[in-house]
Image 1: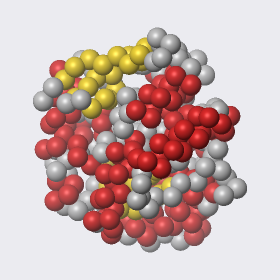
Image 2: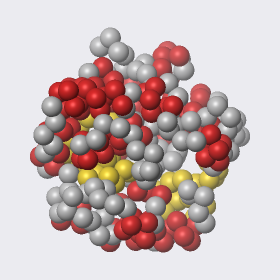
Image 3: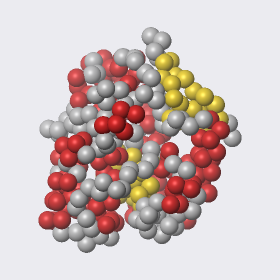
Length: 298
């Protein structure tokens, strides 16, 4: 088990800090020293899981902070955002804090299955998997990396994109992530609810109803509409975090919520970059049945 600091350098010399490698896997340090972060990471496999836990597995910048309250409202039968409940990223917490979380717990994570607690498989814990087209995900992750104090990054998108494709950015190879979860969906189809970010944007009430059925929640269309309204992008961005707390994590203007739209990649990718990305995607995802939406008109 190896733990080492990790500084990423793009083609023009801009560095991305605040990361570590754990057995070669790149992750944010979450402002913890290597020893502490490594200890937590490698211990996660043995953490205890409750029978009513639900996993929210998402690609980084695929709607984690959007879907988390949706799942929570469905599980608790409430339609209001609770100021008392704080979002917890499983990847960044400690076993002590994890054990203190009140049920129902939502294990929000960007980690691939191989790093998650073993008891999740033993207990057949339900997984809500949220994916987003990788072009928009790349753009969103770029701005997230650019705007967080932790990473201290000032590079250009054209230089960040190759790092994303090569899996050198926080949370590593996105293609391997998709492959690993698709394999899990094929072997345990009843255990995973696949939610596409774009479907949730375009037909949110229907998708929330589908998530409710998967979770075994008896939710009326009226209730799901109320959840959809409470968790609108505008509401979530407005109530995401107090200004003082936001300033701790982000540079001026930064936030977990930027645009939340489909197709923003078109204003960032050149034609050549888009074609190159499509070619690599076709190679890396050959044989995959996953379908992604790249425009709201599709």
